[in-house]
Amino acid sequence: MKAVVFAYHNVGVRCLKVLLARGLEVALVVSHEDNPAETIWFESVVTLCREHGIACVTPADPNSPALFAQIQALQPDFIFSFYYRHMLPVALLALARHGAYNMHGSLLPKYRGRVPVNWAVLHGETETGATLHRMAAKPDAGTIIAQTTVPILPDDTAYDVFGKLTVAAEQTLWNALPALVAGNAPELQNDLSQGSYFGGRKPEDGRIDWSQPAQAVYNLHRAVAPPYPGAFTEIHGRNFVIGSARLGLLIRADLPSGLTVEDNAILGVCGDGRTLNIQTLLCEGKVISPQEFQMLLINQ
Image (cartoon, rainbow, N blue to C red; front, side, top):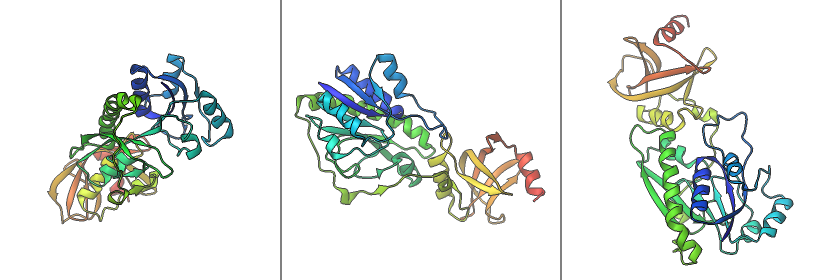
């Protein structure tokens, strides 16, 4: 069986390794050039292809006629998409004789669309997972082949959850591939009325509204904590990013909402009076001590 694979990120690397371990011929990999403005904390699909001698291209647009012609000439049995960041045109998907499949980072139909792990953490979900599904014209809308669930623990950041999700994606693909190759994989309805669609997130979406309850502020921190851009608050025109924190038990109705220093510790006081215990506070990539931050507040 011959496959063309669109892949990026850790899920792309691990799922590509699964295809190779299961004996599929990977005729071509389509990936992305790394964005120099993005923190690259994940593994490289391009490097993996180089190590295995697999042809790899990184076109800016997967809709290009040249790429279509290249894939058409390969006559693939399967097309897979593993955390590739663009929608693939229906005409291209139709080139796969035995189907085109995507690995999505949620329990579809929930959290269709972009950055599903971050959205799940932001909304306080207690579990998420990886879903292998048939690709269709709409994003993450095709029938479901297989799913694997992972827990989201109360203090997990999106980075923590993404590590679990990468393993879940690997397991899902490993278990589903034999049936896909044999042509008898079950396909379950993907009932979009029971789910939701979410778009991408920007660094500005990490701005903290301290009038919110502490749990909501903590969920925002967990959803965008480094290596993502981070939840931040602006003081004197400078952005202070929460690097790490824990949800506190203190009720501090005597303090105004926002960041403050008490007993040589940085606290984030939220709208319900509960606090975040800030373990690491960053400004322009530098760790800010409680003493430094207190001096800043004194000199406001």
